[in-house]
Amino acid sequence: MYDPELSDGDPIGEPFTSLPSVAEIQAYAAGIGHDRPERLFLAYPALEASMSSGDFDGVARLVDDLRPFRESDFAVSNLIVPMVMTQFARSSAFRGDLDALVEQANEILALPTASNSAQVVMLTEALLCYAAGQRSNRGEVERLSRNVLAVASGRANYMAVGSCLLVTWSFSAIGQVQRAAALLIAASGGPEMPRIKIWDQSFGYDLLVTAALRRNDLVGALEWATLAEPLSTVPVATAAVERTLSRIADAMGEHEDAAARAKASALLDERSGAKLEGLRDRVLYASALASGGERELAIATLADIAAQADRLGATSVRKLAAREWRTLSRDAPRADGGFASLSDREREIAVLVAEGHTNRSIGSTLFLSERTVQTHLSRILSVLGLPSRTAIPAALGVGASDAEYPALTARQDEIARLVAKGLSNARIAGELGISVKTVENHLAGIFTRWQVSSRTAVANLYVARNRASA
Image (cartoon, rainbow, N blue to C red; front, side, top):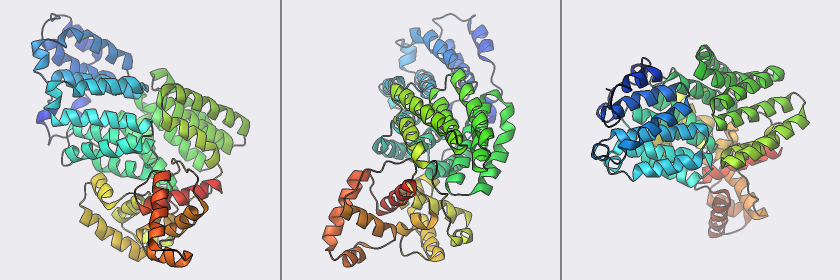
């Protein structure tokens, strides 16, 4: 049997495409006594097959069947028990049951065998990171993602890649779409994503299309959609592909087709029990309705989505629905002409800088050293003719459209504007006739209000806020 603890260098994906069905495994297990440990080893491939087919109820039944083993001497000393439990926690994540997910993850971390396995801890913290993302807890996402990526770096096994995917969806949930897209490509093995299963590939292409459209890169979005479309023949991927094609249709002005595809995606996700994805589909549906002139229906739909997200405790979805109306008429971001002169890696780093990330954070996401990131950044500033990294958000027009914008004081707003122009604290002080210390104090206040920790993040939110209000 595939052992995730012993397979750091193994490729991912193909070994899991030929698993026996849940029914076949259960039929075989029926001949094994309930007190035999072999049933535990049969559980893992059965759970994997259930997750791959979206059968969350099947996951719950399998876990219930294993409860008699939980306190046995065999269970206490064997890693298979926490591995089985992580599958159950994953199913809670995809069902949108965030309270159950957190409870199950903490239960795993309390097991002696789990705490002795760096990879089990990595996967469990990735699950907690996912829950934090859905609840818009940026601080927890940053803390947990650092832990996960530190362990995952250099590994290409199933658990490492799966953990990176959970962190990817966490970044996306808090509005860091460019960072999520960069991590997805780095972790999954490239544009064709050979290291991940078809279901995850379909989610991945939807994210890459979203990131490209945020950069006003319709050509790139169409290329990703072309790779996604063949996956629609696989039932578990159909909903995500329909969602992807809905985004493309809306971007091309085909709003009726966009609404129909988003509605179809929502129905498929709701039937499978993927509640959070179903709500995101409906946000997309409302956006297409509004773009097509059906504003009243769009508003009513968004209000209902926000109410349902509240009941699930999915703060990120509620905020997405609440803000969507404000962003529907937003102008497309402009791209600086020099952007085309950058290499693929430089463009990747530029949009991550524009999204407000530090060199360390970018290096962690792309599995590069900070020094390498800084080398690329120096060339980016030179090519774009910008004075500092804080001017990149305005130059590229890349804003964090999923972020909150608490009101600033008049002076703070003035300073945020000058930061977005790329001015240093000393130049801002000179322009406003105040001391550098006063500028620093105002910046600290902006950091607190907007929950950021860098000047570039301030510039990013300032650009995004002004574009949304326009």
